[in-house]
Structure formats: structure tokens, C-alpha cells
Length: 75
Image (cartoon, rainbow, N blue to C red; front, side):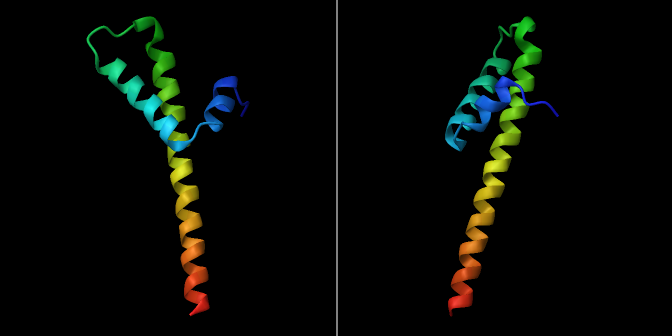
């Protein structure tokens, strides 16, 4: 798997930034004036953003689980 420049840019986004961009893409795709020439790239970018958001959620979940385990072990 070769990381593109878009992938690198997405990796630097926080969850809220990625989600805001994803919402913007979805609104554009849902609009009446969809630019067919940009459609494929927008869908691909949305897919990358979705994967990034899921990854951030999974990482946060893991951190929370580790903190909870540490608290339980202290008791």
C-alpha cells in the first residue's frame, strides 16, 4: 500500500476536522448540482475520512479501556 499525499494530510486531521470535511463532502454529494468530474475523487476522499474517523474512535476506545483497567486494578 502506497500512501498518497491525501492520506498524509488526513492522518494529520483531528477527529472533528475530519468529520467536518466528511459532512461537507456528503452535503455536496447530496446537492442537486453534483460535479460528475469530481464525484469519484470526492467519494474516495470520503472513504478515507470515514476510515480515519473510525481509527480515531478505536484509538480513543482503547485508551479509555486502559484507564478503566488501571482504575479497577488500583481498587
